[in-house]
Amino acid sequence: MITDECINCDVCEPECPNDAISMGESFYEIDPHRCTECVGHFDEPQCVQICPVACIPVNPAHVETRPMLMAKYERLTAAAPLEPAAPQR
Ligand code: SF4
Ligand code: SF4
Image 1 (cartoon, rainbow, N blue to C red):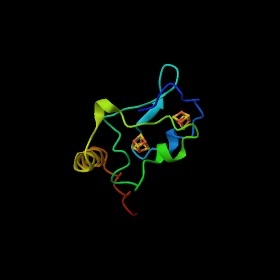
Image 2 (tube, rainbow, N blue to C red):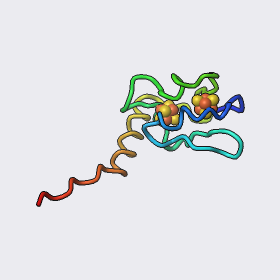
Image 3 (tube, rainbow, N blue to C red):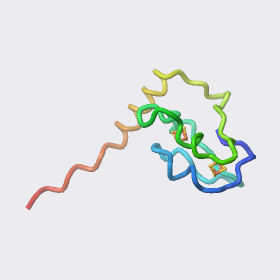
Image 4 (cartoon, rainbow, N blue to C red):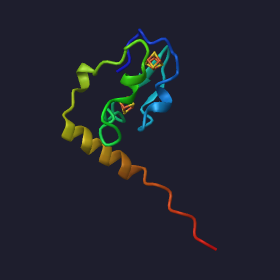
């Protein structure tokens, strides 16, 4: 989750591999249903790594185990498969 210490610097949003970060009413927010804490993509949460003011703690309402996060990653990637390659002419 992103706290109200967020300075809206915009650097975390493009780093998220799950498109879980978006602008909220007055500062950025994370959709807990799309955040896998970067499990499946990276070793460390990318937004936490890059945030200059360290305002991204784990959401106490969404504490998840690694297997739960991996299952979410698999659900998300299955729901959005890569576009099939265009047929060769
Ligand atoms: S921890 Fe990873 S998946 Fe979750 S919001 Fe940050 S960048 Fe996105
Ligand atoms: S990197 Fe941190 S301060 Fe910058 S927009 Fe994201 S949460 Fe806010």
